Image 1 (cartoon, one colour):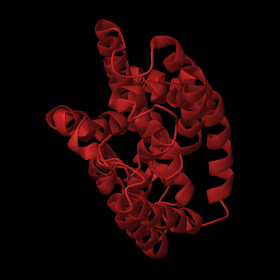
Image 2: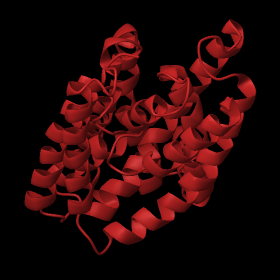
Image 3: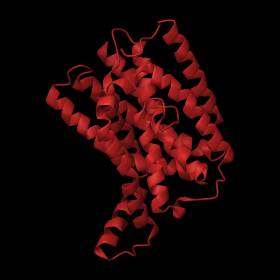
Length: 278
């Protein structure tokens, strides 16, 4: 049964990681409907995110290799420091700082009180409103070539909001980008690239910690590995679909989905069907 549950959660992770609907929130919710399963924990979520972020590496492989090589070239002096790819490397580093700092400072809360489903339900609804506003008023005039240090930091702060389940990493980053005037596609693409350092850092840290602890308290190493592989495959397909979808559509469908799910959570929690902290 543990393997079947891991497969289900791997599918959920892959389906929701890149959509602005909160993968960590969905993992929390779905896990409660599985037999003999409670919250699989922040560690399980972080480790399975290694699968979805590997999908980002594969999907954007040429872009990532080019950015890294040009960034190192700018350090050696063989590439102009104003080169767009070299600058992108710096902006990804700058944008990763907020979530790293806040992640370390708030680690105890992230692994405990932040995981309350009451918080998840509230953030699903509240941030749906922010996404709707950003989608409505965003001027969509800027491309990734227009990035600067200030925007990089603001993007990073938007990403850091994802430390609270229910916000969504892509939701926080994309909303910030839209409010700054970036196009939907540019904001979405940058959210993928910006997530790579933070997610791999968090996932590898939790993986090392879990191995040291013997994977106690949640799924074992086998089921967790399977869930991670499944998250990779499904996540890769979702990346391609999302980039095509937002090139022609707004985020309205995700806004209404978030609100509906948040309201449903309130009802289920109020009726005692779901336990907020189990």
